[in-house]
Length: 339
Image (cartoon, rainbow, N blue to C red; front, top):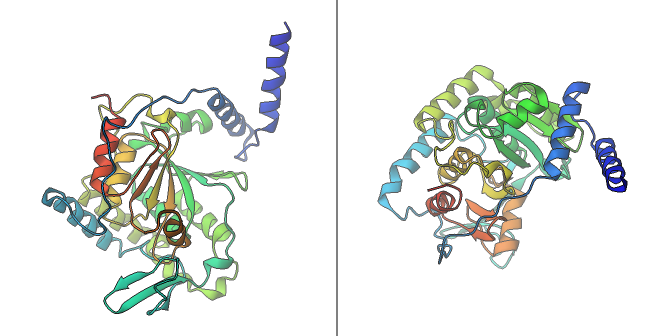
């Protein structure tokens, strides 16, 4: 009897402390219930492949000619979207001759040592907790939001919902009664919402520069001009052969319960793209650390690893940390599939 009473008290406290994320009471109750249930789920155990050793990083190098078509398709997709997300908002070059002894990130090209940053994001509000986005790689609507996340240099946890019917789509349906993606949750402000255009505006208003006069809003037109963004995002998805739109047949059925992997990269990189697609097809939750040009996260990686290169994957489920896009893809297939 005492155990039952203690259990009821604990559940009551959990329900009390779970702050609703939506404006409707039904959605809030669903969201709190989903969070409470997650506390009791056991994380599956996986191990790195036998005798696995992370490859040596080789920046901007295609180590196998068979990978070249994938890189070319990624580059074409990038061009359709006019390179949106390559640079952070307010990108600028600080110096062409940065001190080579500086421990911060810089790009060495011939006699130049280029140091860049953002003129506006240093004073923009930064979320204390990662935002959460239910999305999938091939969705043109999700792509616009992910590009905005890169522009604002935000860290976001992605919950893949391939085709808006698989992966975390069931969780989304339990929370909201809908499977529509993208769906954004901000645990810092207790706000959640559907509709990509609303999400983009929310991100700009909440985590963009506080002084809007310091940057040209028209610079955001590749994501805010709806028709252009939709058409070019669809073309980019077609070039990538709709990768990330369906769950991989042999993906482990418990992948959604894994600890979130950590991926450093940026949306339009043709090297990062195949890793993102694979994470989506395997329905693996992952925290995406934006590393567009001018991002402060480039400095963070240099401080952490002594170098900068993306994609960079950190897997808390196995303890593996590794570079090299196509080796990461092979690793994910080896660990998170049934065959």
